[in-house]
Length: 312
Image 1 (cartoon, helix red, strand yellow):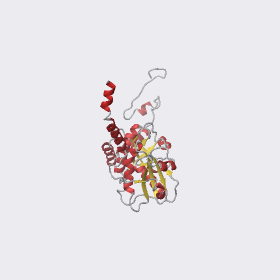
Image 2 (spheres, one colour):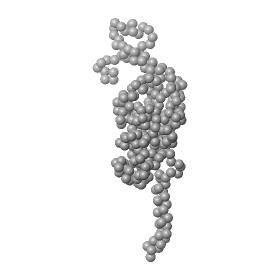
Image 3 (cartoon, one colour):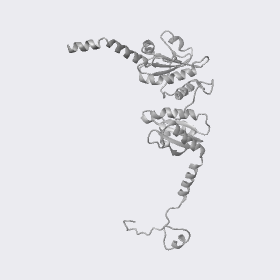
């Protein structure tokens, strides 16, 4: 009887729960706001690809990484999907367009493929999934700045340095550099803050904000003796000046940068002191012939010892 009572109690509720669950799942990737990216389907995929440069995200609505990427992808699409743009930003839902995804050999989500105009063989994107990295990828593919419609159209972020570019880039001027590893939890937490700092200081010529992926750019990280992640270094003219040890908020990082820019000579005094210290001669060995001469002027601190003395 108890079992029957439970069944009767929950029987009318079950369809509602199922509907709510279905709505919850579908809500994850639904378009609450107008979508700026182009939704390609079986009907138009083959006809569209090849007529223009296309950057396509293949996704599944239930994929958490896809959900995380969606706002960035839509922001990129909003910037670029305009009349006359040299590249279009699109997406394919592999749960409804399985034929396309099978044809394109999609085995994981999200997969980002770039299709050149007149060429159906795509280039797979494998970089970080932030706005500046995606934009840099498109710039490389197109051989120029993908967006030149206005300064606000594509906001630059931190400069991604490589083993090939870091030495030349850091050799002159002032730089604030994040050395990181993609798998590092603290690096992931810092990432949006560092992107904001990069955007904030992009117009400045007095300092550049950069980042180095130490899992790939090993030479650069060896050069600056990186032992932990993330490591934030203030670098001037190729020299490591200081390791940032403060709070990693936008406000605190900005305060640190402004202080460095406002007091450019502070570290030079420290460096000069170090140079002077390096020029100081080693301990002078006094003996009968030079003792009087060495202690004649100024203060002299003398240790009297015996070689056989353990405490000496």
